[in-house]
Image (cartoon, rainbow, N blue to C red; front, side, top):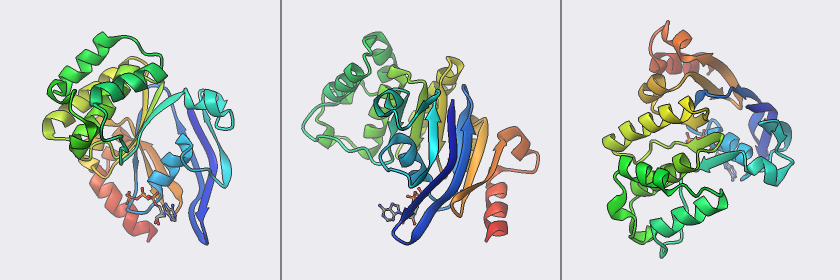
Length: 233
Ligand SMILES: Nc1ncnc2c1ncn2[C@@H]1O[C@H](COP(=O)(O)OP(=O)(O)OP(=O)(O)O)[C@@H](O)[C@H]1O
């Protein structure tokens, strides 16, 4: 589904990604973890084309990143900071994006708006929405589109507890229906409940990529994280 080989990226003299290799299989929820500044956002930005890598290949559904348009049709991306036009409404924004993805099933949209309790905010200008509400809007759009792979950078940030429950249920339904998810997070207790596997990024490389049930044999993900961080330092 998603294959990354030898991904490298530097900013000036600073080598951020030093040969990232990663495979994500269809139907998998992969949690992408690592300390602050490890390079998670840089990796996701390379995958989604917001950043051009210096070296390495990225392929989604057998389509290489170099085939720009076709490649971009394979996924939907929710960045950590959602940039919006402040004067248009959530309704207009969502419908605009749905049109881009040729998604016309508005019953699905209504369903996910209900799930996330967004009906009352749908006609408000985006500029008056909170950080969490913008994230909900992006999630509603993503689950309505149902892309073959959903890529998210810290999607749990700003979500209230009800939205977190809705998010977990939607993720479950989405992968049961053939979707694949890769998301970065610092919330290891949530990751251990919803992910099938965890990739740990440290010093510009993936130092561990393992199924969650195998990791939990030795304790919590938090314990694994602390041990890995300490060992590698
Ligand atoms: N545009 C840029 N120019 C220069 N350095 C950058 C740029 N973007 C990121 N970096 C650097 O690359 C490194 C990795 O940043 P990145 O945002 O990918 O980390 P992260 O793992 O997502 O961190 P966090 O968990 O704190 O969000 C950091 O040292 C950061 O300062």
